[in-house]
Each structure stands twice: as structure tokens, then as C-alpha cells.
Image 1 (tube, rainbow, N blue to C red):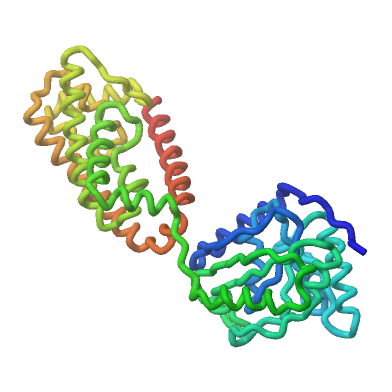
Image 2 (spheres, one colour; image 1 turned 180 degrees about the horizontal axis):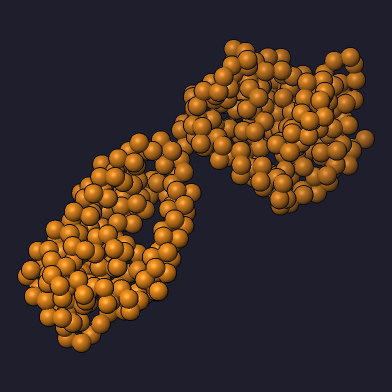
Amino acid sequence: MRRRVGLPPGFSVGGAVRHSVWRNVFHLVGGFRVVGSAPYEAMVVVANHQSHADTPALIAAFPAPYKPVVVAAGDYWFDDPWKARLLKLAIGAVPVRRHGGGGYESLIEGATEVLGSGSSLLVFPEGTRSTDGRLGRFRSGALRIAQEFDVPIIPVAVVGTRELLAKKGRLTPGPVEVRVGHPVNPHELTDMAPLVAQIEGMLAAGPPVPSRSRTWRVLRNHMSGPAGMAGAFGWGFAEAVSLPVTSEMYLVLVAAAHPRRVLPAAGFLAAGSVAGILVTRALTARGERPPAPLTTPAMRSRAAADLAAAGARGIWRQALNGVPVKVYAAEAGAAGVPAGPLAVHALGARGARSIVVGAVVGAAAGAAAPVLRRFYGPYLAAAGVTFAVGLGLVVRRWSR
């Protein structure tokens, strides 16, 4: 008799948190990639078992709406209340008995709890972790469960977890890959052999491929060609005219994806900045002030005072005082500072600052390249928040 299967539970906060946390953990320790996809319905997922990292990898592979739940050995994972609570929190598991009889009945109880709520059931048919990477004997309990509940059974190969965290071994950073096979109607099977064959084929496809951030790939390709240098020139120009984002943020946000191109970009950034300074000076001298968002009267007073005291050399003081360079450019136009000397001193001041920042960014990006390749999106978010906070503090300082 067919047992009751619930509707897929849809989005859940707990499942989404587990999925996101484990996915980022794997990216952090070496990279993570999923090959293939599964139907969105309650199903039985069978996978090879090499490491305690297998279950987190499977949770990271299936989006939260699938809400995959693993059955875990009750005598190992649920023998201590604190360990049981931690397991529930980290991966959401239900216990089954491995010894002393009643194993299949216990599996049925766990499956009723999981599949009955519409979630997918994760089963390791080998029962224990492999010590040499070879598949052990697949017990038929998972197939019987799929037949009794009339849900698809899908084979999955987890690759790289044994190297990451071997049985009785230490954590060794490296990439992990989850390869999803083709779902099978369980009523078409008489044993586990076709599922084993799929998993063996996926395991034979080779070692896991280190993951790469899509954002990182796009920006690295951008920086590899002339568009990267044109972008640097344009950013420097825009900041010297109106853009309220410092020119060096181009190096931090964009050029860091290609550390070897950071210093050349710094040179184009300085050139663009000088061109923008001259344009802003010329416009202001004609009485046409470009928009200058996030600037204050105190900033303009400081720039005017520096230029009045030192002429074109006054722009050197901009490098450290937090006043935007466009303010110096506008005040130079208002004060009639000659374009030639202003261009010379602007090139020296802006060039020195860009090269110093570029050297720091290039060195840091080179050292952090293995992490940036996988986490460029979060890196951009962190850099953006840091800049926004710093900009707020600067504006506040010059608003007093």
C-alpha cells in the first residue's frame, strides 16, 4: 500500500540558513560546485559515503525548498542529548538504528516523518563511511522506501569530501563537487545495481573542479583587455568631475579581480583624474559648476584656502585630508589657478596616491586570490559597506 507523501514544504528559514551556511563554508575551504539538477518533489536521494562532510555537501547542493533531511545512525549521533541537538541544528536529521534489529522499521519511521512532510530523504545505503574511496555494498532499504512511498529515487555522487575530511583524518582544504544523477522510477528496479552504476560513472568523471565566482570571472575578463584600462580612466575622470566615489575604489572593486593589472589601472586612473580636474576647472572658470554630491561648505573653504596659500601646489594637500578632488578642481577654476601648473601638480599628487593605493591593493589581492576567486560577491559587498561607512564619517567630519 502506498504511504502518504506530503507536498513540498517550499521555502523555510531553517533550510535556507543551512543551505547558505554550508555552501559558503565549502566555498571557503576550497570551493563548491553542483553538476546536474533534481526534480522539485519529495524523493529519496541515495549517495556514496566517504566523510562526515557528505551530509553538509548534500544540504548545500539542494536549494532550501527541497528541504533535504538525512537519516543518521542513532547509536552514533543521538547517544548524547547535546550532540543530538547540535545535529538537528546543523543538518536537521532523524535517527535510525543500525544494530540490534529493526533497522528497516526504524528507516520507515524516519521516512514517514520526512517524506510525509513533503521533504526529501537523504540516505547513505553503504551505512558507513568508505576508508578507501571505493563504494561499499548498497543496502536495499532506500529502494524499498521509495517503492513504498512511490517517490523517485535519485543517485548522487559526492566527490572531494574524503580528501577534505577523511574518516579519522584531519581537515585538508580542497574543492568539493556534488554530481546529481538521473531520477529513476523505483518500481522499475529490482535491486540497487542501476543506481550504483550511475554513481560509479559520476565518480569516474574525475576530481572536483574548483569553483569560481561568476562576478570574479566577469571582472577578470574585463580587466584582461583594454576595457579595464578604459574603465579606470573613465572612473578617474568621473570622480574628478562629479562622482561621489573615490577613484581608488575602482582598484578595490574592479581591478582586484586581476592583481597583475592593478598597477597599470592605477596609472590610467591618475590620467583620467587629471583630465577630469582640468575639465572641472574649465567649467567652473566659465561659471558652470558641475554637480558635487556629498560635499560641504567646509570642504570648499579648505580647498580654497589651500590653493590661495600655495597655488597649484595646494592640490597635494588633498591626498590625505578627505576633501574630494573635484572640490579642489572647482575652487581652482573659481580662483583662476593656471591650467598648466595645476595639471603638473595634479598628475604628481593623483599619480602618487593612485600608485601607492594600487601597490597595496595589488599585493593584497594577489595574496587573497584563492579566496577572492570564490567569494568576489561577498567581497564587493563588504568593500562597499566599508566605503559607505568611511564616506559617512568623512562627510560628518567636514559638516561640523
